[in-house]
Image (cartoon, rainbow, N blue to C red; front, side):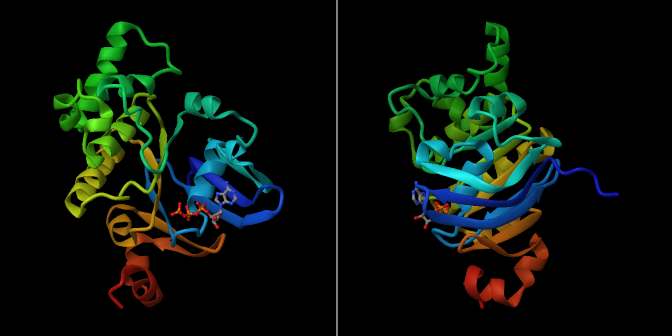
Length: 248
Ligand code: ATP
């Protein structure tokens, strides 16, 4: 039998403000150790799906009204975002959300707040981040707000890594970044996946780049999964080429 997935989202419906039905029964699974992409146009429901998983809907006046979410075999819809972080699920929000007035290193340290680490362990956790993001080490004392967009995205991912996650939910990592920087970031994601066995669920409008790095993809359209498959088969699919890869 196939191994139990790390995460499974089972037919969730999400409503904002009691009336706006945005997810109309979304199901997906994230295997242990994989990179899974959540694809689709602006407004398709990618961010909403990630928010549902990490329980960040409440602040947006949204709620899961049907279906359920299981992580490591446990139903998690009732857990707080902080509980999820402790269990190993960390979301990197769209738009990066660094604390602009804190240094890069201070930003990273905020990611470890659920762990109450000793000083030595904190230093070790920082070094682990710097191994993957050497650029952040050279920028460690800079105010995050003055670093480049790519460095801010790296800081946001590095901060997630400080929580020692099993799974990172990454929202639109390519947004607003030059292609070369996007590649650099996706290569680091692949490294983290392979060397630290962090599993990823990443939401991306940039189908090209996402399918180059992901193992498997789900394409959302208007709050529903309209297609899913191995990255190679999606890349070869004529409809995907025409509507999402711009090379039809
Ligand atoms: P994006 O690339 O913009 O993040 P997305 O695929 O992630 O797109 P969502 O952000 O999940 O899409 O949005 C899906 C739909 O839900 C959109 O129509 C959006 O307007 C609506 N929506 C999102 N957040 C809210 C909210 N807080 N209140 C009401 N509607 C919302």
